[in-house]
Image (tube, rainbow over all chains, first blue to last red; front, side, top):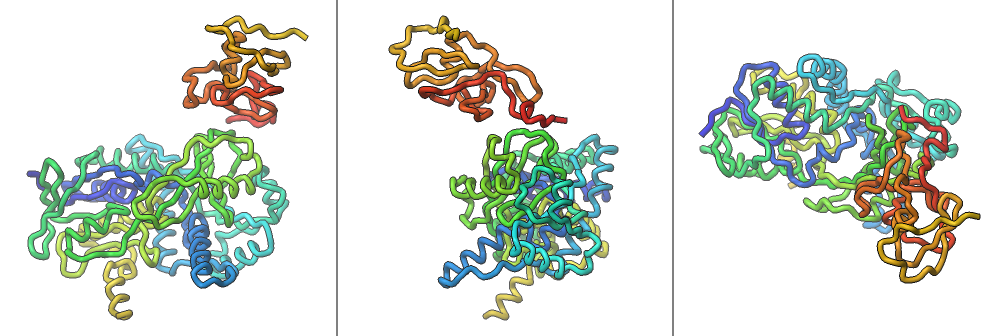
Length: 408
Length: 106
């Protein structure tokens, strides 16, 4: 039997960030328990810190939206409507941008204090336009974010060619979100874990939480196959699997479900991209080692993590259309991950009404890498009873119950 | 033109039904064998030049290691061990796409 102040279930980007920030800012006794299941989202991430891009529905958002509108039109048998940007509410912008702003300092801190480099790169995110429809889409995006006008740059075809010489001549221009950057997602998780370990967190890796110990409405700990962990606070950071743990902890269910994304990775290439790219077909990011990562499909197929030829083809074709140089390059690897999706695409954070000793840190959908930093900070504030940096009301799990009551 | 001699075949070829070209020299080949088996039989040990301009030879011979990539029919980076020979096929060894295109790794 072990006793901790905080037990974190899940060691992806979010769980690892919670462990890091808690161990950095408090003297609490902390354990992190993690089992990598197939489809672990942090390992299928592009590592984009696309705070604005994702908030306005670019990155995998645009693919998500395309899928939605396609499903919609197929269901009704109508023509595909003109695509409109899919903008998330203001509370999400604030959440994402606050987190994004933490990375430059966090990168320095990790390098200097813990000797780990998660490869933070200032890249920008360009939405490449091929035609007037794309331009209309881009205009709608920028009209939706007047308060962020200074973070958006319009590039005409010539300017784009100068900055991204390998982008196709068919492109008529781009919008560039200058504050959107990238990291190496594997190294980010490793950096959080290593920092946490050096700060004294007990890491139980390759260990599965098998059940939650509950006494009435108080969560008292968790069990693994071999041990029992008692704790004052249990943080649920179990990604696409979060609902299982939530059910055991509270006796209720919450809508967190796996949303599959397939990814194509090229061989190592010379540096052919100066920034990250999003088009209406896919997003493309060249990582620090030269590999080019192309993502990503959006499919609701349960916990299935297989690849399918049609999606791999779509993604590859989208990337080749944008960067013709890729036509001659080889694919190194394809795989798939499971985003922890929620119905409104917002994460589920914080305590649950009527349940003690339990915090949600889940449902980060397609922005877990980006928002891991602020999530770690918010969880630290919650555990220590401080006022949180951001208002967590829009992210509480109760929003779904209220929605259900209204609907009912 | 000088022909390449297959001096390293372990067992004699069952038939020699066509020729392919390796680095501008014709060499006998038979249906069903891989480009790599032709290269090895013709005494080619160094087959690929990687993106760092270092030569390499075939290692796994089963498509995993990507150490035997050659230019086949003007297409770069084809795995010799995973490509079956075809009549009139043209193979170039020790070529590198990025070198030819003048794109440098950092």
